Length: 240
Picture 1 (tube, rainbow, N blue to C red):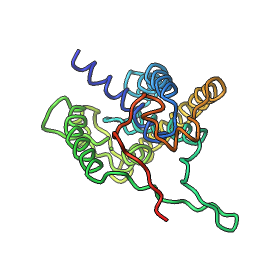
Picture 2: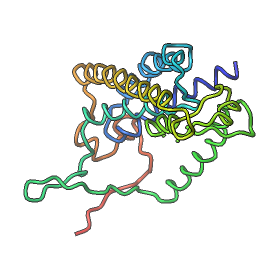
Picture 3: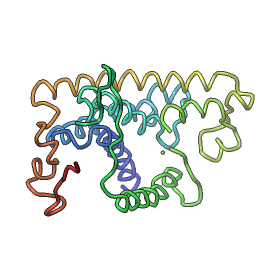
């Protein structure tokens, strides 16, 4: 049961990656629905392919701590969601007909720093947990790059200790075999997640809409979506 719960956290992480890509402008109902669909349908298919004895696992694909299963799934779904949703208000300005990207700074450096430390601390349990011990470290925090890196840098001495058998990457005499499998896995997951996410977000956009109103986005989603302010008495002033 402890291992099952650990895997549930992986499933939830894929959905939270998407939330970061569409934050501050998405309806709360949409967040609940896409989180359920990703966790119950999109993510488990990839998990089975690679971690559950599926076809990529049988080919020999290695994804020890979730570069593809977790982070690529969340990343590709987040990209599709952000594409259909559109940027935040004020993200772009026009100059001579060209769109110019504008930085939107965070409202609180102390809270951003605290969040960084909390995430950092949690990752000490999240990644070493993949080894089911507290003495080894497994790298996940890399997506497609991390997946392909295994095909380049895998070394059998380390692979054995990770329980994946004797296998070497391209730079350690293993040729292109493992790199090809890793690339096939990355492309396959990209196709599955993007197509399924397009269908999911497309249906949600058609039926209930993905985005809150302009006024609600300007005021902040706390009051509009949850009925209360995150910061009592907080007001936005325009400096002339």
